[in-house]
Length: 401
Image (cartoon, rainbow, N blue to C red; front, side, top):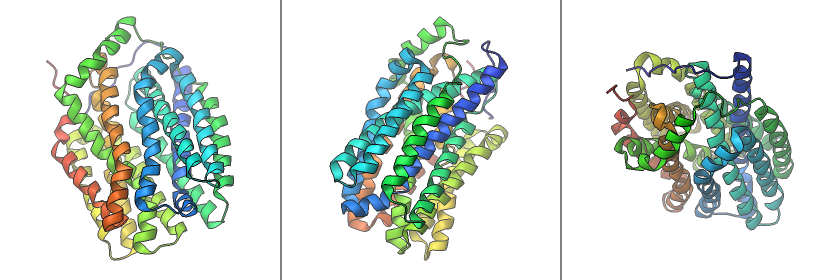
């Protein structure tokens, strides 16, 4: 059945809400651009530091570790500082982490580990805060636009990947590239966050208190936990594509660094298209049929990418893979927020479980890659998407009591 419509609430004037929408897009796009800019230079950092696949996986683990540490702390931080100041502060911290990587990788692995941990920590809190703002402006507008914000994130990743490919092709040093990105993100995102809608606008004390009380109870709800597993499967598929598609294309198909980065950009472009046009499909056919079809599409795309006889078909597999994983994460967040009075606790639980994929994904693929090659290790994505296909029914809107 189609998702229930969002009910508008009293709050700031529509001009203020529209400004909040624009500011939220800036936050999502900036986050995606910053992440993809780093990801586009992973092969060059790996080569400079002479890392094996397993070692690279452990280095990438630092991002997930920082994010997982930030996730349980971000709720109280956003509650105290508000989403506006949290996003602005985390953008500056992420810029500092990116600059540390840009300069530190010339010296050794330790500065890179520190920089990536800061990047992951800032990204985790930033992610929670901008989703809080996205849910708020969605509520004030009275229509579902959350997946469009996630499409904005994907658009940012596409832009970051394409700029990264150009920097690789033009032989621009990693340090110069990432330092410029750090400066841009550290200035533009705080400027955009100034337009955020006040977090307290249109939210009653009863609703706020109910959300806080439901946080622990949500860990005992079977549906919430299953949605978390569903989101984990899609997060693993998405995160693995972000981290390893470039490496797998270069090592598995003997492609150049530029072609590897373009494969990453193709994957991100397909995911962006799916997120932008997906809401129409969800409204028309419902969550469960659409997500089950996309799960199968993601499985087919992953297997085609891994077992393609040549690079052109591998690119086609990357397209299907990107389309297949496009809606899993945002729809999982929406499913957790189906009942507004319990949304805060449930979404925090689902996000916590989903982020475990970013913790386990890099080392899992890296360790498998040392034994069966990185390209073949990506079949793990198909296995988890198969699990998601089996439990897709959990994202259906609950029936009215």
